[in-house]
Image (cartoon, rainbow, N blue to C red; front, top):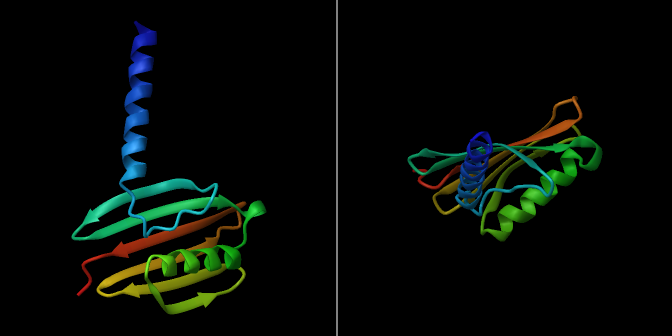
Length: 122
């Protein structure tokens, strides 16, 4: 009985992660090898995502360049860009859509990437 419960739990957990992963908008930049910390629709056309990557394999400036390329490939243009070794703040627009990306070296071996997508900005 315990094995059946464990198997059912694993299937439900797998389905929920798959559903969550497939519902993430393509505008969201997810770096290769990133762990998803948060990924959810906020309502009113807003979406928030948070990822983290190992600092030993990445740098803030390199991730910022990747994020810019990704956003531009989705039709966004850069409207604000501040990048240094420890953090980066990026803002993009595409028509009435806005994407904000913050990348921060957390000094604990991880770099965090926070994103807000607003597709109903007025």
